[in-house]
Length: 408
Ligand SMILES: Cc1cc2nc3c(=O)[nH]c(=O)nc-3n(C[C@H](O)[C@H](O)[C@H](O)COP(=O)(O)OP(=O)(O)OC[C@H]3O[C@@H](n4cnc5c(N)ncnc54)[C@H](O)[C@@H]3O)c2cc1C
Image (cartoon, rainbow, N blue to C red; front, side):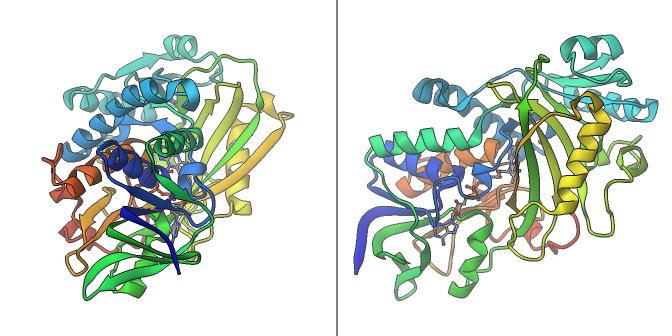
């Protein structure tokens, strides 16, 4: 039975798949997008929406994410205010002199890397974010960071895809590849076959199912959680990161004055790898949201763990004790496809011509849409706006064992 037929079939309705469909359709390709559940079912529908330029490091990652960040100005023109795009920057606050020393070095290093960054003293930090607790002694400010509402972005861009002629089939799990010899000529789905000249696999953490087709995708599920709370009156127009988030980032860990003990909390659980990527922000509606307890589940289990929820709430009540009675609207978690070097995998599989991988995105808001643009250039045979060598499936840095904790 045939479900559809296309020039390109895209597997996965997250931000990578939808962006890929959009850029392909913009170039005139006939595109079908297949999603096993509903659009945004995966990490993209559970994402906090941060555009964190300040935490990208390494020449290529910076180049790629700068280009990814710039795309949002174009998307704002195309999609209007539908996805709560804001460019108010991000702060990371701290409580101790030890932490301040590390963040002073962080700001100096970021400026040397060509970013805009400032170290704010106690007074300036509280003026910029009056919500901060009184015992905060300062903060960094990264004005280039921004914020979106990722689930809304996915839906709005999917709508634009439909307008461009993309046929989107939700509740349509892809079961495997269709092949003619080694050449990939489409996919098998629960609803029938979809033949295509090219298949783009943007299945996020579920891309490991390609193992059954003989393709090993070296990603590891990394679980992040979040909690949405009732609206609060206090002004907060920036993303706030707490000091515990520091240890997640390789470029902060490498600073001379960095010590793990400055950035760990007894509520975290080293024995199970449960750590807190502490952050707080507000939606445009005024709801407070907090994140992100994080760990590495053995299975593809995208439920928030009890310990993860406790960690997030303990941190909220320690930092903002006046929110004790604030209602919780929703708590959730999602799975991010972590790679050993924190760069995505965007490549045509040598053994299976016609199959293009677009997965391994740990910071999909910045790297996701630009991936879509690059895949569209690759498939169209256009000049690539950025090299794809660094994103090869065959690069040595991917073969490092993906066990233990990955630092972005
Ligand atoms: C709580 C949380 C907070 C986060 N916050 C941020 C943030 O602030 N900034 C940031 O940059 N990143 C953040 N991330 C990470 C970001 O969400 C991911 O990097 C990004 O969403 C990856 O996008 P994707 O399209 O590759 O994957 P996904 O969004 O997971 O999409 C993959 C899609 O493919 C579908 N699929 C898989 N297999 C099949 C199949 N066989 N057939 C059909 N469909 C299939 C899935 O159902 C899914 O919808 C966060 C993640 C979480 C969980």
